[in-house]
Amino acid sequence: MYQFKLQALLSHRRHQEEVCQKELAEAQRNLSTAQEHLRRLKKDKRDNVQKLQIRQKERHSTSKILIYLNYIEQLSRDVEAQREQVSIASQDVRHKRDDLIDFVKKRKTLEKLKEKERLAYQQKMMQAERKFNDEVAATRHIRKGSMDGVPGPGK
Image (cartoon, rainbow, N blue to C red; front, side):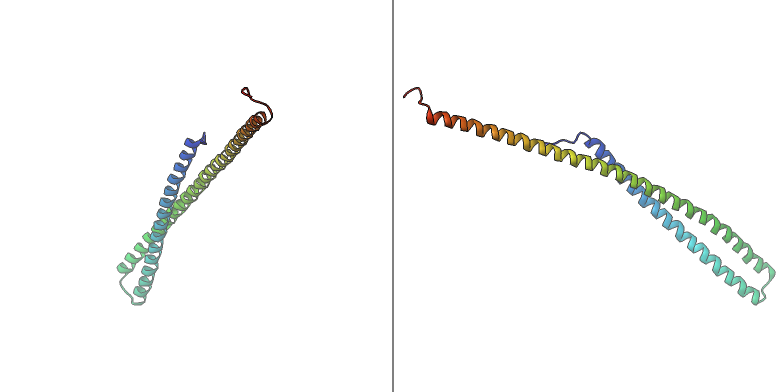
């Protein structure tokens, strides 16, 4: 029976690939969450800018308008900070994807080597079996020939 001498390494590579897949999935979830938060902040900012414009047309007090301006300014800072978070999360996804690609390549290389060695082993076993069968056939032929033409000891 064929035993791959690097089976432990192949198993380890498969495990690394699975861990990396889970990390990539988590990074993608984080990116999606960050992008959704950024969308909500942008929407909140747009909504408040519209409210401010309405308040200005309605000639509300300066203090209420200042409250809106300060809040919109804070939302602008929050949007920029969240854009940075999205950028970081996006880079993390790219790195995790690159890592996964590397692990897949390493695993596939080992699997190809395993298959190549398994086929070589099968060829070797088939060749040994043919050689054995040829020897058995030759031995039978020799025995049969000696029994047909040569008188035995009792004749």
